[in-house]
Length: 254
Length: 136
Image 1 (cartoon, rainbow over the protein chains, first blue to last red):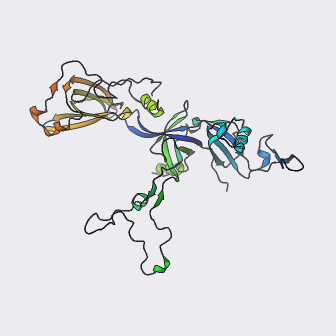
Image 2 (image 1 turned 30 degrees about the horizontal axis):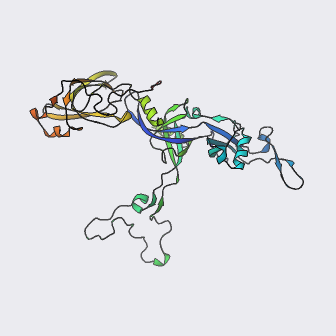
Image 3 (image 1 turned 45 degrees about the vertical axis):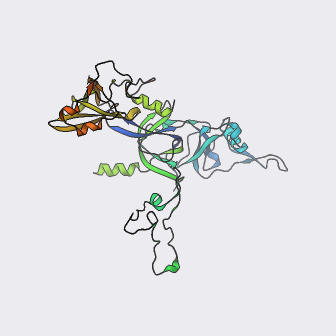
């Protein structure tokens, strides 16, 4: 089986939440995402032959004794499109970044770079632009973002534990995690994966199947129903939802 | 301008009738009956205005057969067709929740027959969208 999906996704930035009214008067809570414009930085092909002309030769042994040798570039072993979002000033780019961007015909590197695995050979070429128009005929998307950081959080916030009694003789154990489990076989210690306090947030989280309410192709804005992980102006990745079909068939069966 | 604020402006009505807390108003609200639409008028005293941007809403209180009834209308909802001011009230606080504890004559507010104190309810009231391209 080949990993990857039928279509690429798009990179974006969460602008924030608001609400908009539908024509029937219902009010929809939406997250506005600036989706694109993204640049195709590179495409990955399973075999070298599939790469566009001029891409195949790569010089190896540069700077070594014997000088440059043109050698056939190997295939990547998989299909993917690498997108970049938000140009960053050239002075902030490393030289490899600049070189990589130059191959796609760009002046400087991008702040957010992600690859989208595909099942089939991508039609995009390096240097192409991907805009929010991509999303316009999608009904639902999966959104991947980085959640807000909560720092060191207790079990109540981190694992939805309950509180302990405020009174009835409870002494300074109101928000503690309680027992750790295991009674007789103490020698086995604390169970693996026991929920405890610790660092919470700043995790990669995907919210599946958010409804696309509206797409503004002019300004590359996507309105999604509901919340998206992370703080405002955090980077997000939009993909066509993987959940869609299952839900639709379940509904139509009814 | 903050882009989100800009987007909200586009989804807002260009103008909202100028009214404030304490006014007696008629709210024209579109309701659906079967496949027909008609306007229902809810008239009462504005108890509070709250929220900003698209979320701005007003709470209107009236007495229906001896029972106090309050409704909250999102001002930018397409269902709120119109708001007509019947009477201006002179008030000394932003929220008139104390009216809930009063009955009969005690619920009367001092009338303001003079000029409109514009803008008297902060942002949102009578706001002009500076830039409203193709808000659908």
